[in-house]
Each structure stands twice: as structure tokens, then as C-alpha cells.
Image (cartoon, rainbow over all chains, first blue to last red; front, top):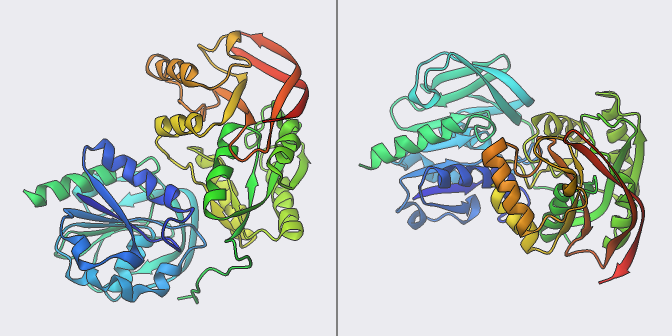
Amino acid sequence: MILLLDLSYRAHSLSRDEFVGPIAHIVSRAGLEWEEMHFSEIRSDDLKGAIGIILCGTALKDNLFAARVQEFSWLRNISVPVLGICAGMQILCLVFGGTIRPGCEIGMTTVRADTPDPLLLGSPAFQAYELHSFTCDLPQGWVVMAVSDSGVQAVRHPTRPLYGVMFHPEVRNDGVVERFLSLCQEKDR
Amino acid sequence: MGEIQEPERTSVNGMRLGVLCSGGKDSLFACYLAMQKEEVACLISVRSRNEESYMFHIPNVHLVPLQAEAAGLPLITVETEGIEEAELSDLSRAICLAVERHGIEGVVTGALLSVYQATRIQRICRDLDLWCFNPLWYTDQEAYMELLIEAGFRAVVTGVFSAPFNAAWLGRMIDREALKDLKQYVRKYRIILTGEGGEYETLVLDAPFFARRIVIEESTEEYFNYRGILRVRRARLEAK
């Protein structure tokens, strides 16, 4: 089972269909089961059946998650693969000691993949959809996989299967989520 | 990093939102979803004089006031020449009016796949410090169409703009039979099921949140080479 974590301003909000729904659709298409949960509701038992976790994005004006970073401390000890999307990447960054600062991007931008990684499938450059009002200054040791003119776009933990993308892969880059799901299945074998 | 606070609330019922409404199924279904989570304070409509507008679909946008009346919602309407990009300032003006008159804190759209539309509306909302919600964004198209019919929406086709749509589609209700045909067109002609690629346009005559439904009393049709429009000349509300 893939656990989809809703990072929006409250459980079952109007943002759920926009940011969790499209990811759930990709996971279903890949033939995997998923469950979803709001970040405020998560308990350690909820993590037991998950072979991977996706931290979903939020609306541009919704940065509440960053004010409640202590509720994500469980990420420090997680062993299954995690993909943080936009708000999710910002949370990974904050939990592991990085910082975020204002940096707004809206719309399509060119992402350049500087460090080869299966998650990005070796594409040297691709177009990606951005919708964020903060950008990340990474925790020490994290690997930058891709950048745009305005900042870091894809990162990974130096040793663990923890990934972050600032762009929204559900828009025209489903493959990023699909490859993450493959990674979850490989690690689960 | 900047100060981050819990979203402010000015209403006990939730966030007050304005729904961008073209009169078609997507904007009114988005309105229906918004009503279940927050408070819809008004509809916002932009009437474009340009039939090729990039942003606003137009065949029967003049019926939005009747839809607003049926839903018991106030309506903000502005007109635009429909010139690319300049029409965005007209949309921004409409949203500003909705803020002034109805105290909206955010905007809801029926955007499904159009990055062009979504990007521009997101930028307007950012500039006005408003929330932006797109509850149909990259949704499962088949599931959405099924839900639309199941929920009791009555939407008719008022414009067709691609093969293989013939003139018989003008005025046709989006029901289970129509959905079956549309699914076949997806497989055979690679249309987008919801018409988001501009293949067809719809007008909503009834919705679960309408107190009354719209009856078309008089309409005219134009159709040539897979392009056609049903123009509603006269319509009224009747009891449900």
C-alpha cells in the first residue's frame, strides 16, 4: 500500500481533490493500492502497511504545514521510500535541518537534471509545472538532482530513499511518480 | 523564512469563495464541490466578445444570470473584448469586484487540464492575495463524468468544434448514452472525454443545488464541417 499524505490546511479540504486526487489516480493506474490521510491525523501504526509514502502538495497560499513541522518528525526515522512533492519537499527539507524562504513560481518551467537518477530517467531537461511560494535551502549532504533558473527542483537524501521534487509531477510528468512507485515495489521485495 | 499562519476565517461557515462560471458543466460542478467544503458567496462571469477567446468559453455565457438565480447566488459579471492577455485584467477586475461586494477570500475554477488557464488564474489570485482552488484539476475523467450524471446535473451540448461530432450533438443531454458515445470517441478519435481540448462545450440546465431548473424555449443552430453552436435565444426557470 502507498500512503498518500494530505498536507493541506485541514483534513478533507477543498484542496484534497486538486493535490491528492491526481496522485491517487496515478497510483491506481499503476495497479497499486493506496490510502490517504491528513498529516494531522497520522499515527505510527498508520505507517506499518505502507511500502512507500507520498507527501502531496498544497495550494499556493497554503503554507500551514510549514508552521507545524513538528508533526512530521516521524520522517526522521522512516525506512520506506518517501516522495515529497512541492510542500512535501519543503517538509523533508525542514525536518532534516534545511530551511525554506520566499520564492514563488507559477506555471511551466525548464528543469535541468544535473545528477543522473532513475527517478528522473536521465532526461537532461524537461518542462515541469510549478506552483509554490517558497523555495528550499537544503539540509547538509542532500543531493541536488535537478534545478531550474529559480532554484532547486529535485533532491534526494544522501543515503536513504527520500526524494523531493519542487515541481508537480502529476501535471505532464506522471513518469516521476510511476518510477517512484517502481522503486517502492523493488525495496519491498 | 516568512511568517506562516493558520488560514484566517471571516465566516463561521468556512472560507467565502467566488466561483468562476462559464455556464458549462466543469465550472458548475466545481461550484457543487466547493459548496460541500466551504461557503460559495457568489458566481463570477466574464463575457467575452471574442469567440476565439483563450480563456473564456462563450456560446451561452449570457445564461449564467439565470443559473445564478436558480442557485440563489449573487453574480458578478464583466465584459471583455477577449484580446489575449488583456482579457486577464478584465478577469482580475471581476474578481476584485467579488472581493469588494461579497468579501471572497478565494476563487474556484473548473480547470481540468489547461495549464494555460490555471497558470493565469493562479497568478491573478497570487497578485490579489486570494486562495485558488481547482477541484477538478487532473481528475480521473471517466469518474468525473460518471459523478456528474449520477449527482443529477443536466448539461446539454451547446457547441461542437471537432470531428466526429455531428449536428445531432447540439442540444444533446450528457447522459449515460452520450457518455458511452464520448468514450468511444476517446478511443477512436482521441478526443478528451470532458471536452477540455475544446472538442465540445456544454450548458448546465439543472444541478443539485439549483432550486429551479432552466428550460430552453427558443434556440437556433449553426453547424458546418464538425463545427456547430446551439445559441439559446430564450430560456426561463421552472419549478423542479
